Image 1 (cartoon, rainbow, N blue to C red):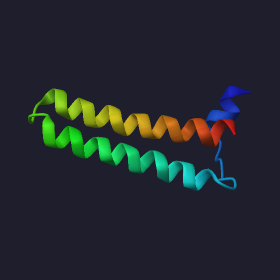
Image 2 (tube, rainbow, N blue to C red; image 1 turned 120 degrees about the vertical axis):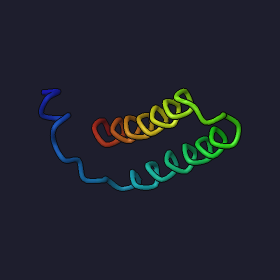
Image 3 (tube, rainbow, N blue to C red; image 1 turned 180 degrees about the horizontal axis):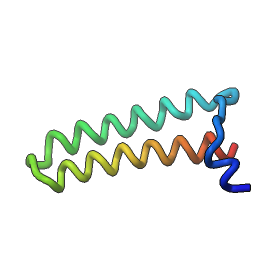
Length: 66
């Protein structure tokens, strides 16, 4: 059952697009803060990559489970 859910298209339901947008906006604010405060480094790159992954997985949680 999880395989079917995880590998299927989940069209947005009413209200989900707004949730996705809220998550992206907050992540963007945090990304700008990281960019401003953290020196260029591997660690900074990893922080940005993991922030992108957080957005992806948060949105997937909404898409797959609501």
